[in-house]
Length: 611
Image (cartoon, rainbow, N blue to C red; front, side, top):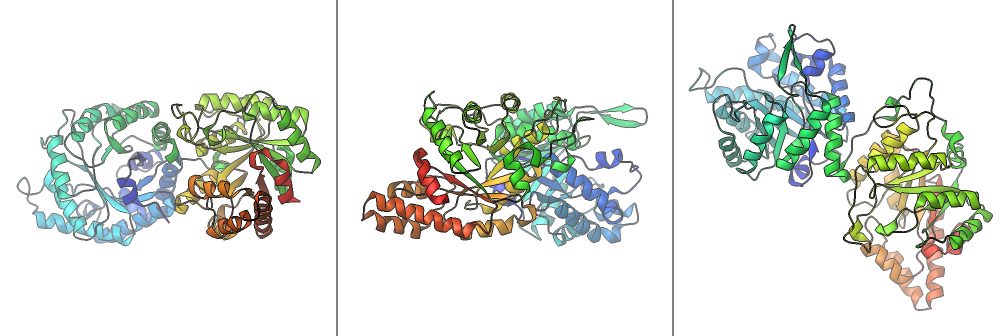
């Protein structure tokens, strides 16, 4: 199920629309005398590949290749009779590329002729022309419409009414302006804003004609004249004539810098128009991620990552014993321990020795759990390797470090022999005992997975070689009990695409929830390690059920512990261990391993569950 476009419009987050279609088509050898809209019928694979390139660059909203697919413009190619077919096919191509990850907007541009009183075309004729295009896009199941590059406010109104006569799907209404902040008809952007707001459009914005610098002032003015969400899709600067070509010279970095300013001015939907490419959108998406990293979703398929010449990534089975067991499909067992609160780790090391003696495959080292300051997971992992020899799985959060700091940490950890990571976005500082602490969240877990996958291929995020590749076995988190399970599933897909080697779930108390989640992720299956958290007190169970985000404890589990409490604390612990064992028995056929939390560091409780 695709994300809800209506929900995205209603939220406060910033979303990324794709860039130019014509620019990319021209760059791939399609001459300008070709009808670009007709390519939906004759070269659908080409159009689909461009949509997918934008999707993988980070676009969350794709526009159909139908900017000029109205009967007036198509008639110059003898294709006006194919208006509905071209638009329907374009919508289906975009939807195929978007999959469950992005929304699809049906793109509608001006008719290419003037409406009365400045031309011979009546408003009713315009409504009929636009209506044919809308009908085709609706038949292709678009999520909404984007009316773009209009200069005549009356023509834009006719296009809007043609949509509204047929559907209540969301409408993005965009005009194009000249350097003085007006349309070519001389309409002030404030007038546009007030009119479009009165019509009832869902999003108002600007696209084309000017670069990001010229658009910034107009967006600031629009923000003062409307309460609608704003969109901004500038050109890649003003075109320059080079020989017989129009060249757009604004770099992806330049576009990204101005995107941040457009967001600060009030833009909620950002993208590109003429001259922009997937490279621009990728850089733009990275800038958007710094404003709201938890919504980040841009990823690059692992198959697309290539290392420097002569550098080959280390095979998964050769990176660590944990990785070898995953490849061999052995059932693995790990225990999670909270790190020491101070600088002395003697008791922690003793617990690790107990786990190693019991044959446990790995110890999971938390990184600032619940936003609390404890001993760092990387130096603690080095101690575990040196003193015990059991393999550590280092939890690594994105909360406290920017991307450069993360890369420095992970290069150093690789040099010290750390091989297994569990990458998580991290809890907000307000959840811990330091509510005034600040978070960084430069990138989220998807972005960090992308980065570590690149390090494993021998290069930094920017593409520069780092020499020998790192050898990380990359783990990510998943929550089968998420409230928005569709969004959780999408994020899981992106993590796998980014390079995840295995996933560890949130604590499971209801095996049916995990079974349903595994069915949802069947096509993107990587080894799944199920988490268990033995409940050793009723109070702790009630806290987890009601105050820990992302954890679902069924009422019948609470009831069992409540009945056991009448027999004393020891009875509650025995019942909690029994519940965990029963859950493990149900889960074992479904997963490739189990990850058991040791409550308050009590290793024996975890071992009682496993043994």
